[in-house]
Amino acid sequence: MADPIQFYNRQTRSLETESVYGEGPLRFVYENPAGRLALHALVKRRLFSRWYGWRMDQPSSRAKVGPFIEQFGVDAAEFAEPVENYRTFNEFFYRRLKAGARPLAAGDDTVVFPADGRHLAIPDLATCTNFWVKGVRFDLAALLDDEVLAREFAGGAALISRLCPVDYHRFHFPCAGTPNTLRQINGPLYSVSPIALLRRPSILWENLRWVTRLDSLRFGRVLLLEIGATCVGGVVHTATPGSSVAKGEEKGYFRFGGSCCITLFERGRVRFADDLLEHGVQGREVYARMGEAAAEAM
Figure 1 (spheres, helix red, strand yellow):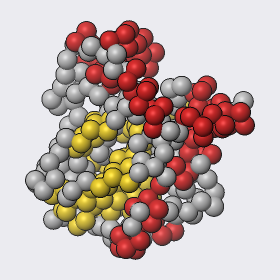
Figure 2 (figure 1 turned 90 degrees about the horizontal axis):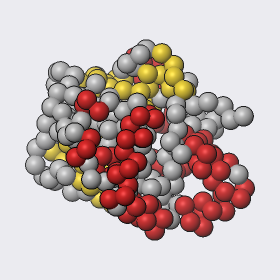
Figure 3 (figure 1 turned 90 degrees about the vertical axis):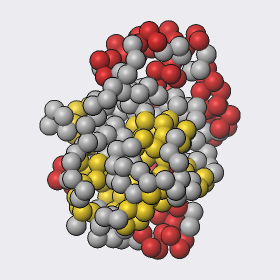
């Protein structure tokens, strides 16, 4: 019997067990020898995810919306539109929320979570040697595909925000600043579920990803990354490079599939919230929502 995947829920202030969407197939392809053949031959390839994303754009996919909401307890009262307005599963998946559904933590010295999800804080990347699996070092140079930039952020801090299919899938700026041009780094599309990451932590610096530098008066240079994943039908960036943005302003959204955002800070810029630090030491994620306080300026 596989060990349950636990996280700390900031809302309930308790440990909870994650209900993994598609857990059976995920365990098959990442934990079974026959499944791993399918993983490398098909599942990790972009064509597979494009095909699955296309299926979620078909009118027939609308029939999945109601059962999904019921099974995973998604709060439809937060939706900007009535459920019956969503013509496909993807339209439901990257839905907008009502104004005020995600209030922002106040203060210019406060960094907010960029997305709903399960968050893992790494206060010092230089000393992180147990990333998901004991003995695995977080490979910043591979993640950024830039040795010079990696050296500049060595000893900095990272916030890894993992979005499950049940989460709100728009991502936002964690602080005010000016974003530069988006840079794409090509790669495969492994799952970013904990089932996959426990087997292959390097997924985060192997997968297709996008990097944006956010120049912030209060926090210096902040790097924002969106990580593609299996069955993500597309990542849509809605913000305009070069234009100043406010904290909490939308940056973009993920189409169908579990996904991940990574926020990188320079050394000595932020101190993470106490619950992130407490549970991060144990390699445990904290569930929190976009707009809640993630860190304070040092």
